[in-house]
Structures are given as C-alpha cells and as structure tokens.
Picture (cartoon, rainbow, N blue to C red):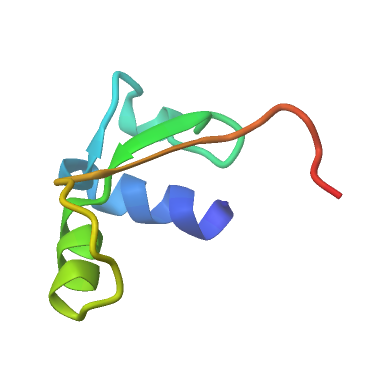
Length: 65
C-alpha cells in the first residue's frame, strides 16, 4: 500500500478522489477509483477482458488472514 500511495501521489490524474495529494497515504486510501493508464495497458495486453474504463477497489478495516 505504501508503494501504491506513492504512485497516486506522483500520478494524481490517475485517481478520482477528494483527497488532497498529501492525504494519499497507505492509511488514508480506503477506496480508490481510477488507474486509467494501468487498466488500459492491462486491457491492451490481454490481461483483463472487462469493458470498464477504470478500476475500483476498497480497503477493508477487517484484517485478512
């Protein structure tokens, strides 16, 4: 998550958010929508076959096992 948070701080156009850039930390990112360039590259490379323009994911407050 630290690497991901750094990515969205350095690439603010790749994420829909109301968070200010300095708030995009591993702890502050609870939901993310975007990753436009990464998603498009994955589609072009045949890694995903989902007709969506962006990725959405959510961080759970419940620890995983």
